[in-house]
Image (tube, rainbow, N blue to C red; front, side, top):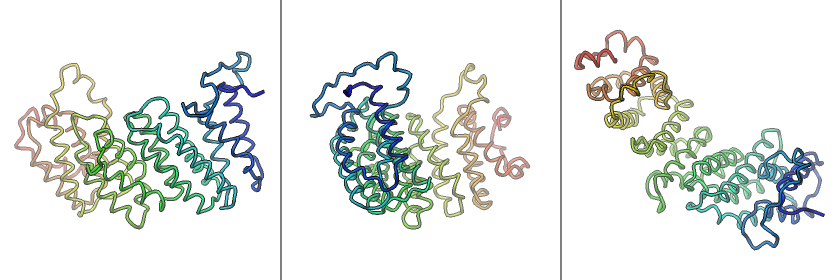
Length: 385
């Protein structure tokens, strides 16, 4: 006597089966039960598809509410992740076919123009499945190479489509799922995902737009550790992304600017900068200086407590200068001295303090001992320095 379309019962059903799947013997055959399980999962998503049954959500009986505290989608993703069996046998093939059918039915609901509840539910489900499989792999589970590669190829297109959504929440979930599925097999995911992300940054994507650039930056930032560990095209693709992302520092788009700085922080935390990166560093600083030149001077109210402001720009400057070799830092230091001007220091006092603070943190002797001259600045701006 199953009560359909009741959130409490759905959570209880998923939780119970998840525990059974997690505790079942390694050789347990789930194949006969997969059709019923995936049909129920399809109903739990509550999409307006051609499945029969009422879409009206029935309330949970009041006396049982304390039993049903949990997320329906989280329980569903855990269940599917635990149904994936090690090896490449018949059960893996059957589960893969059901997964592909579920993805085929639901992927059209994650359209770039749709940032509503359906898109968030589906992306949360796909991302949760990838995260659950990743956790199992870290716990020692060994999956079949062929079945895992096929599953990755099946789930990758919906995640890449979801990262084009306008909703920041959907983009974040897509980036998280992309990182999780890439960790299961970078050799399968990175060659398939990076061309699409690079196309969005370079403008070659036919549907490229400002929020697509932001989503591409967020996805690449989540993949930075895997790209640096890749012995083939990863480092080269990352350098290309660094070049293409410089225009992302845009005073008219704070969201894109923040995503760009987060990407740089992810790279600088893991990679030192040598002399060969001089061109990129100077192009980046030129873009930042243009950004600071357009900043409006702070009002008296904004000036109060400005020292307590926390900004991604401060962390970026600290990492940028600390990761430079002494030779590169010397050239950058001379370049900065020539381009600091009175108007910039007056308008963007906070940003300039972050810049000089990062320099002092990396090379206090050369910055503070007078090897860098600021004689071209007026007395008020010298005091700022």
